[in-house]
Image (tube, rainbow, N blue to C red; front, side, top):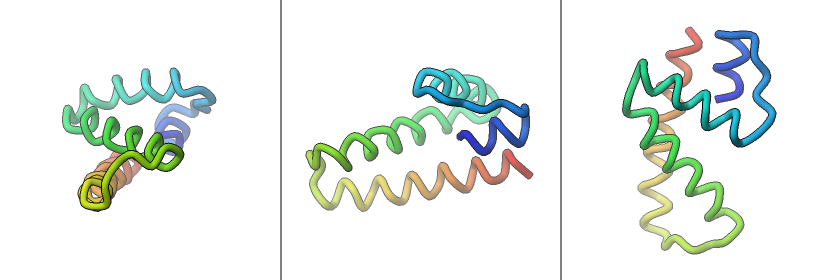
Length: 76
């Protein structure tokens, strides 16, 4: 998300709030970004808390890869 903001708008996102607001901007271009972003955020929390079972983490990993592919396209 930060790389997209910097490449496209010359913006440096420095807080979680800024990341969420920028995601809201990107979802206007591709609505699926919102749910994919939420999955990535939940896995960030899970990294510290370890709440999700392994099968959920594996499924989330596929969705995070999908988010990354979409973000790469937005930077092209």
